[in-house]
Image 1 (cartoon, rainbow, N blue to C red):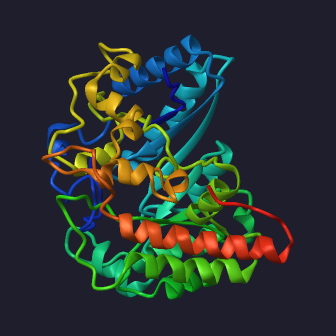
Image 2 (image 1 turned 30 degrees about the horizontal axis):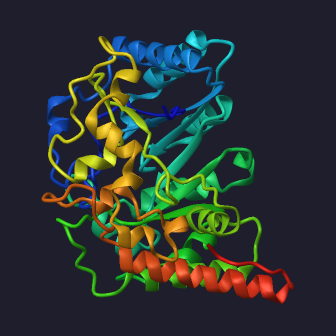
Image 3 (image 1 turned 90 degrees about the vertical axis):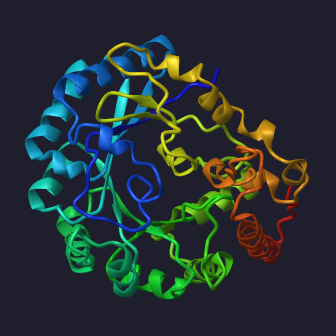
Length: 377
């Protein structure tokens, strides 16, 4: 049995923004309406105890807990401080915990940043890079853009006094805008760690872009690679290169790997990867809860088993592909089709193929210049 060390805890099921492409609220799943807006303290304690019990049973010495939402900062400073202190008080001495938090960045102030530093919490800020794209999609419930608020947050995070804070930016890729322009604007704002996410489409919900995602990603890759600045980390590209050179990745949507994240919702529901909710309303609702069930109960469910064994149901065409060992057939949620489940090529197959092949060509050419022999695959 695969061991899980990555736990996503949805401490808030609501958000102060209403991003049009949000997989939690606006891509067809409405189960958030059945959940408490904020996780109760009793559910939080049950969650921590179940996670620690599982870690001890499986002899896992390090776990990662991601505080997520909705917008987790809606829980408020006192609640999150209580949660972190409780997590430390309950933590078995044999288990080390790394905390991170994913936020839209609109509520962060210096008090929060000092808190993140004090407790060594890394943060990811969702930001689409340019005013014209960010204020089109990342709006509040009155339709107002949030670009200025997030930029102010990024400028504060970039200041020298917070140089020890671990943080980065997550951008949802949109090929209707210039990839290089997005990348350059991030650099101008002082961003050194960034990631570009493939948008949440599947074979029942097809992209409607006029331009190709591969063109967008290739443009960013070339700018990043040619800059040759070791201080700038673009996570997806670094992981593609790592897969090319060593066959290992730190990414759950690259390579032939199991899908093994565990998500705990505000009502205590234990669920598989939250992105699966984009495939079908209620797909991740499996009837499990931290009050009654151990974490391992999730592993025995059919949906979780599909995630663990997702490579076994790929079309042979994917397994025969020259980039299979890097691509892994694409992210499992992007493979969904109602009639055939996850036994399909990724909706982004062509763009993944073109982007990864582009990166392979650049990397191999660089190795040849250094007189290093290398054969992909």
